[in-house]
Length: 451
Image (tube, rainbow, N blue to C red):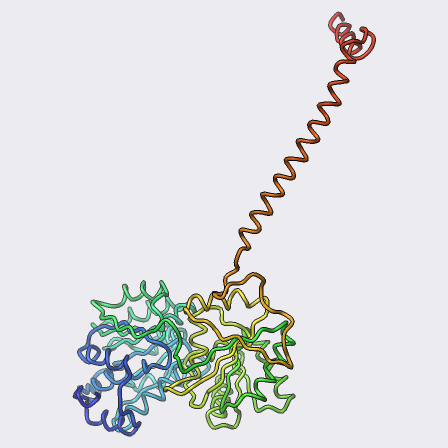
């Protein structure tokens, strides 16, 4: 398919060196339009080849139509440092037989060093919005010659609060440029809004399914509490067969604590989260790729942009906070058609979230038990096969109606008893002389009036 697109020979040479014999579906659908310079909205699942879907056309243009007098011509914005590293790696591989230069502009790197790289006018700038905004404010970057703007994983950038930065950055790209917006989902309202602002007559390329890749087995193991989850995680990592594994936690503290526990049990593990310096993150990922460590305990920082071969086990120690985030976590395994296993550890606090993710993705996780560590918690009572409570609302309604009837009956009986009791008193008061019963009150009132 690549040969039929009339790509530059140097680009075809790089594709052959990478042994890409067949384009993925997202590449097949998007490349003809991107090569024509059309604005695109590309929606595809993680691991589907989206990065090459935009790198191939921008590199073809740079190699085929060199402009040595221009400044930087391609701007690729990404949400995380890890994704920036991955894009740079793919870009270098595809441009290895050409003179195309690319740089990464991201946090965790010396600002003045980045400024010196930008002064050389690299063809491609791969940047996170926050750090690029700092360079714009310091006037250390010029985007006036940008011909193509790529927003990779736009949904993630919006979730991280980069909307205003992205819009402000694109305003500095003063020339008429092509825009390519990539997102794992189009359900995000912010993606549609920003697409309407930045893109002109955009073509939609949508390659996504209602469920995750069929080659990924997804399981749920019920747990009682975090201590039980720790035991389950240790058991899985010492009994499952895998080459590399990633364990996802919700917080940095949980990632570090679990990392320390697994190290205590002599497992080859490292942690990855936002408080780790960038150089140390790079070292951790190098060890992971080289097999020096085979387990990473990470926050959602690692859910996007990590493309490591051999990851065949993902454990969600804490459930992802949304269906889309779950897709990105689990997408670290089962890449390039390989099989993978994803396991969610679910306690009573996680069950509702797990059920909502099942409904959102229209899938059903396989239920699993580990007999030596079987949980006492068995899930909420009265649950249908689809995870929704059954009959609870109806039962509660009946109970409330029954309580109201009983309360009304008791009130009626008390009222009747008082009525019977008061009837006798009224009769007695009526037959008494003026000095008894109610007469003294009447007599006192008369005396006051006379005074």
